[in-house]
Image 1 (spheres, rainbow, N blue to C red):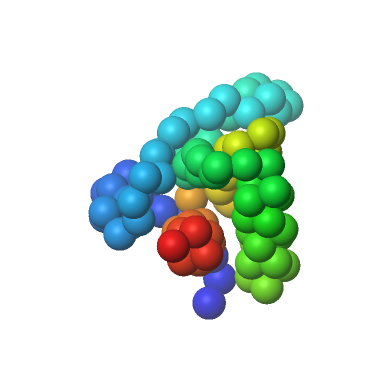
Image 2: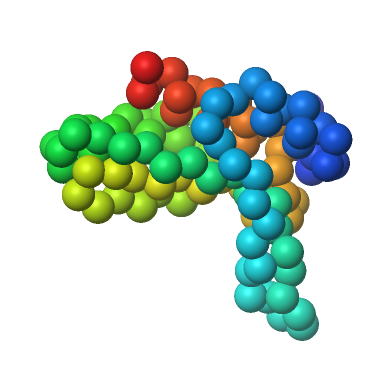
Length: 107
């Protein structure tokens, strides 16, 4: 089945199933005009850099297994993860599946 962009009600329903993730709308530069894209965002705190790095590596493994790649940033004792499906300009069920798997590794 091909991925489909979720509407606002579907996004709200899916958000109820994941803790701590925020829905945000981010402006992406594009031609001929900028586009507003629905995204998921979550910050993960850790006690030290080593734990943060280990988490980022696990997220990379999940992304590879799903062939669905979030934006991951990390520094010191935290990491942020942002997920969306850019080619559909929004959120899909795949983004929420990714979020659930990331949450599972963070216990």
